[in-house]
Image 1 (cartoon, rainbow, N blue to C red):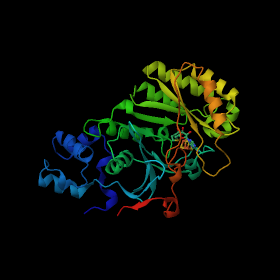
Image 2: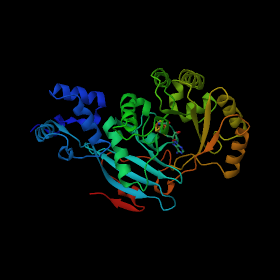
Image 3: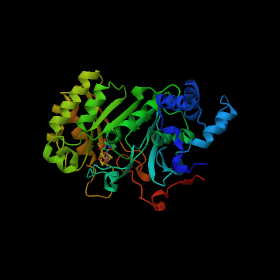
Image 4: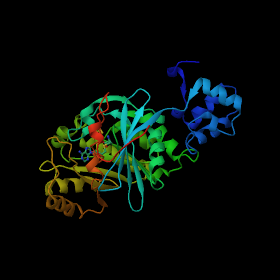
Length: 360
Ligand code: SAH
Ligand code: SF4
């Protein structure tokens, strides 16, 4: 029996990679479709559950491969909303958070793409962790499998807005998105899957060139380089001009509308002049604007008062693009945008006290 680390992790394979795996094993390529469907659509956790696979093949797979990738350690539930946060643990012990947000007409799952994040945005709890490692495609798609198991209703929308910068882990994130979208996977429509980036220009262009059908959101968060340099260090690499040009390139190439996210920080980027600059930027690109009033991470920032938020939105409303506001859901369990973080080794259970359920 090979050691655990040498086992092949089948959940990390795309359908095409799984075909190659079975061909190399001397099996027919259609085995890949069967096993892929069992792993994802049918949510099998053991090879023995795969009833159309022969006992011999199942025993062979047991020897060389594994379906284990992650497990739920804890879930906590917001008392104010139906939002739930899942703490998902990888086989190496590292943990990430996944958020399930049931609303009236839809149920959204917010997925993590990395353990931590290297980009160090000043207002974000994940950024404060630094980057521990990238997640694999299987570890990303597994978060959705776990969320499905505890969701009160079918999941309709996926956002890559949890821990991490998805475009810093481009290949695995896109592979996971295709598993989630595929009919033998979870069958969720590409236009119901949104990938949010802090603004990695080469990857935005690559996403456009590959004509990926998933939705793109870009965290703009400021309208002057001086402001954005301070809030998001990535701006020193690709400034607002270069970022907006890349967004325009994406829209022209794909004809898809994109979204600009804008976290509203009291006294920092929330004045009528900021709103007017944002309006001018948004008018250059086929987009909608999603304003996110800041969620507290006990740092140096604050959410603006309601009147300031309203005045900002009023100024923006003169534009021809749609504007939405993302009021936090689940901030009582630190599950809102920007509040996700896990401790590096030991689990700090004080983070999970509200309405805690332990999963054995
Ligand atoms: N790394 C990606 C996706 C994860 S962050 C990105 O930055 O886009 C998802 C969203 O949460 C981003 O729009 C980010 O700007 C926002 N965000 C981060 N910290 C926040 C906070 N404390 N309050 C509100 N939104 C926050
Ligand atoms: Fe990373 Fe996004 Fe947080 Fe910035 S906002 S530190 S890119 S997760």
